[in-house]
Image (tube, rainbow, N blue to C red; front, side):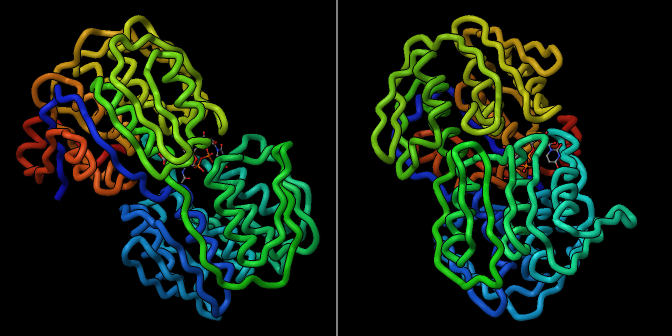
Length: 435
Ligand code: EPZ
């Protein structure tokens, strides 16, 4: 059964919500629990999301006992672990590949079906595998699965051709027990990696982040259990701020780290949005005329690719033409055809979108093709006149906790409805999701 979100648009959102724990910090940190042996990792502020549940299922399959309630997760890791990951879970969530580094470090073995691509790109893991091989792991591809093994990993210098978030996280975790020092050069610097590093250090790992973008890891013999807290989700928080902007309302997002949303705030200021920025909260105030701005997505601290679809919806109603370049993923523009069905005027030229501002958007039946594309359609639906139905809502539930509750709290007129098979056919909606 899939669900759709029905939105009666045109209401100015008003009010305050609290940011959830960051999905993209919780997933690698949960995977890091595999480095423990007969110990417990306790995490606070873990969001209730489909992807967190998938990671729980995967870790349980590997032997970890898990308790999850009131946003608190207790991961009890046994002496012996299974090191073969089930294909159905890896295919369901690419972030499953984050168990690769910890399993090789902890068990000397790992079998991981190749995660495959998704609607935003081919998503290879070649940088992960190249780094692990440099550390001494033997990597073979057998029937579309990575078979890796190592009799202990050795520290070395690893240069990442691209500051890949996942590769940085996997190699970081693989290095904690390696012999000697590992230096990861051109490492990703997203705040979620800082949260992983702080948690690993609390577990007894010896890690140093250099301002040059290098991460140094001195191998240790074992780690201890600890307590850690997941940082606020900067992408979820930014999505709600943009919901305030696109509806010309006034929205405050509380309990965030404002240093993690600098790129968005700079763009909002450039486009004329009045902001109030406190230590742990941001408020967007009603903007009379949103100015068109241009941007290019980049690794942190650049403008985040995970916010590109959402700001594109917002700029669809700006005054003037905005140029948005997507430099991180090769096909993260699938929301554009859906936005154009709602009256947006967006033209694609390779990795660049030309967004000509229009005066209004009109409600339509549209489908979410991935998590952030779905979020961008929700923003458009909130601003559009008339009714919008967003199908394949399951994509959005991967990353947004209590979505309709938070939108309703801000005055959004939204409703979650089950989608009958016949309705999806009538609307030509591909119910199997888009891959
Ligand atoms: C993480 O994905 C996030 N997911 C993504 O968030 C985010 O979009 C992405 O980082 C970039 O910030 C999680 O943290 C769970 P990458 P990841 O490795 O690690 C290429 C969301 O919406 N690449 O930094 O998979 C890759 O194809 C999700 O929350 C290689 O070529 O991203 C892509 O073009 C979507 N070879 C680019 O690098 C590799 O071995 C960035 O990928 C690895 C990556």
